[in-house]
Length: 515
Image (cartoon, rainbow, N blue to C red; front, side):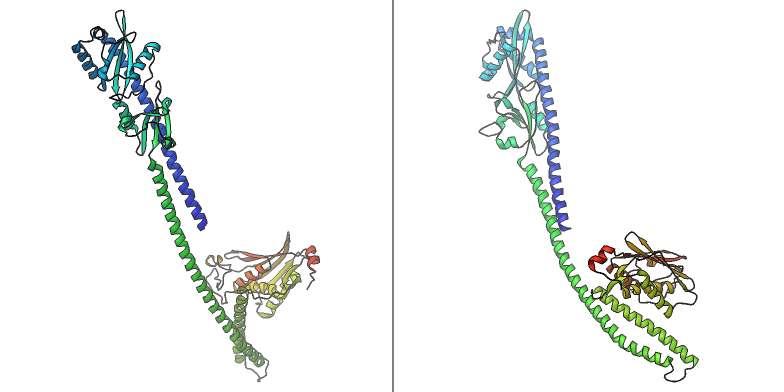
């Protein structure tokens, strides 16, 4: 049981750890998918709105392009741009060839910005990414037209809104990042801001960080990927907490099991000692009673035979009572000795081939010569021919005798007792049926236990040792048989004894002879 409990605890711990990991994987997948959708929508909206702004302000943009020294025009456009896009911090304007008269974004325009601008003019597409300048940012580029003139509007945004999207979706114990796979998984944006908020030598994901990625989802229409990696301690702490609790439970079970074993061993020794004392007591009492009982029985027999002179009717009556009680006490002593021998495996059996009808006739003859009431009849019906059993004739006679005695005592004093012998497959079936009052419900479940006094349905008691049916069951069990019964209140009881047949092959093989 201890091993099973430990296995269940280990399985439960493994299951909980697996489920915990699966829960975070599932939550991570949902998070990266939703965040990727949010970022993609955010970029597409920025492109659409910047294009609308450039279209609406095309005249002002073209005039500024023609007059780059007009600081007032520049300031007005920047102020209006920031009113619509608070996270936009600068812009520039070029002609359709990518030529600009504005001076380098106030020193904010780097090589990557210029490359993106030229690539957009050539291909009309833009690969949005984070540019590492004085301010980490990303750019939105769009065309605009003024009359027959074409230009390019170039706006730079800080990463605050993207960072907020990551932070809003980030699960406790997780870290959401926006990365650029084509640059060896370069970190672009974190939930706390652009990558430069982290102080580290290399902004590519390390091998350890790659191993901790739970899920990743590409951002549509960009080269970005949203990745979710778990905190170093998230799964480890949970795993350790589960293992600690599991080990604690196993330790408690082990200590409890050890204490139980110690107490159980102590209890076994105590019971063995008590059983030994009981057996010694029963042995002493039984043997000490047997000798005086023999003497008393002999003396009563001599007196009944007239050895001490002629007896009056009153004396005969008293002697009959004494003889009956002496017989009862002798049976009790014999039952106690039999139980002691059965439980200590000291009962000696002399098994030979016998006909079941032989030991049944012996038992019936003994009952009739002893205490069979005049109005009670025992009927024997047998369909057996040459069937034999390998059994101790004396002990099997004792079995039948005990059952018949109970049948007579418990309700069959004025009726019939039917004994039937039959064969079923490789077994002899002996049924003994009386038509008395039956066995009460209170006694049915423990009728084969020691010291069970059978209680009849009318609540009358008959005296006895309470050992007879216990001895019967033990003897039949030794012979490889079984005993069961059916009792109907007010109609009687039937006992079923099943004994194994001895085949001809077994007789020849073991050289068994008929007794």
